[in-house]
Image (cartoon, rainbow over all chains, first blue to last red; front, side):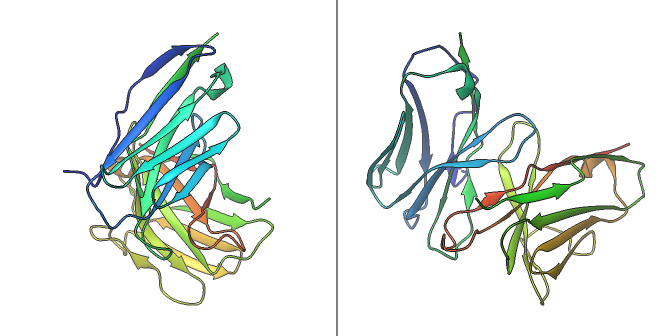
Length: 111
Length: 117
């Protein structure tokens, strides 16, 4: 079993839709949770960063962490074609720990 | 903001040759840099941690004699794939923690796509 599981998709939605992206994990020691966006043939860029459980909102993006269920989510409201990319969840146990990535979900937002 | 630059972005080489990839932190100093490998439709896998002034720390299963890492200065780390073979074809990405971000946030380079013929 992988430490971090993420549905690779692809996920296709119409412009304006609400997108829900999810990851599950098995290591209960993970405390730091991140979402990265990766455009084709580019390096990942950090979207959201959350410590422990709870919600965090930044513009159209909301990150949720449920440590009791070992489940994290990223919601994108009013999705735009420019949101089309691969979204990777990542997590680590502590500040100096190794960052473990999910496989990434490929998202396509159709105009 | 903090920028990490990689060069080259794309390289094709013949089997058996060596290829060097550079990773530079453009506007900050990085005592530590991380090298990842990403196969198509796969996750990023940490290969090694590059430490300025000391030897790199390699992840289990990564051959240190094949993937040579040199952290030459506080702004430059290099990855050399020695005697490359087709199975080494992959997307190699470096990253570094920008200043005042703690070790939780990493800035990634744009990646270097290696194709070994």
